[in-house]
Length: 142
Length: 152
Image (cartoon, rainbow over all chains, first blue to last red; front, side, top):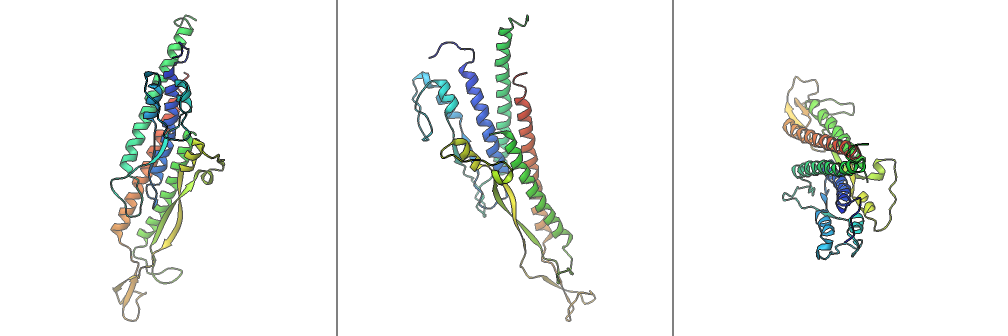
C-alpha cells in the first residue's frame, strides 16, 4: 500500500472508468448504427469487474488474467492505468432471420445507462478536484 | 479513442437510413405507376446495408499494431453504408382495366408489385432506427459537454 498521495487511486479509477465508458459508448453506437445490417453481431465491452479487481488488489484478492495483455501484478495504479477489458459478442434472445443480433431496446438501455454513469462519474471526479482546489487555496482564501 | 468516432458512426447510420427512406418513399409514390422510361411498370427497389470500417468512414487512417487493445477496438467499430440498391425481380401485378392507355390487347395493365403496408412498416422501422441514431448523437454530445466541466 502506497502512502497518501495528492491524486488518489479513486481518481485513477474514475479516469479509467471514463475511458472505458467512452469506448463502450462507441461500441454501443456501432450496434445502433448497424441495427439493420444483415449478419451484424452485437458487441459490448465489460470492464466493471476489471476495475473492481484492481481496487481489490491490496485486499488479498488475486488478479485473474483473462487476456494476454493483462498484466499480472503491480500497484493498483499500474493495474488501473494499463488493464484492458474484453470485447464480447452479446447474445440476443431473439434471433433475427438475417443473422443480425442487435436488439435496439437493449442497446438504447445500454446507451442511456452508460451516458448517465459517465456524467455522474464526471461529476464525482470534478468534486474530487474541487476538493483539492479548496485545500490548495486554503479554503478559498486566495 | 474519442467520442467523436461515435458521432461519425451514428452519422453514417443516419445517412444510410435517409437513403433507405428515400427509396421507400419512391416505392410508395410509384405504387400505381404503369409507365417508366425503361419501359413497363415501376419496379420496387430494395436497399441493402453493409458495415464499413472506421478508416473508410473518415479520412483518418487507423494504423494497426498487433495486440494493441485500442486497435482491436477500432477494428470492431463499424459504421454502416448502403451496399446496393436492388430492383425487385417479382412479376408485376396484372389488373383488368381495358380503358387504361397502357392496357395490353387483353385489357390488362401491369401494376408494380408494391404492398403499401409492407413499405409503410419498413418506413416506420427506418424512422425508429434514425431516431435511435439521433439519440446516440445527443447522448455523446452531453457526455462531451459534461467532460468539459471536469476542470471548471
